[in-house]
Length: 164
Image (tube, rainbow, N blue to C red; front, top):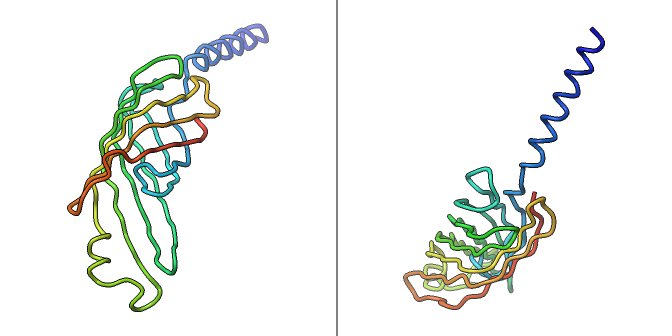
């Protein structure tokens, strides 16, 4: 009986070892400068499949307060990673919700508030380094933003975070 128990434990451990070798980092938590969140944002990204590349999505939140005006941005992006060995080209399409608020009456005019609050369409094109076994990850590229008042076609993005 003791031999069967030991054999069963060895079998379970070897099976877990095989599975753990196939698991790859397909999620990341990162801070993005500029990009889809406009100034900066904290983002969570995940792949919809088991691998580190392919279709995925991310969501984030950014906040900045300048001279009594609070700006909150919430980017959502559907993205696709194409590449291997931790080096990927990233394509994305999404939207950023932008909300402006103030604690003081008259700090911004109603027309300025209406122009700046709303939803903008965003794109993402860039390079991503995300190690297969997790760890420090890096992103850089362009994140064009479009809304009813205009566009920022060459808006840069830089991100640093952790893949797991």
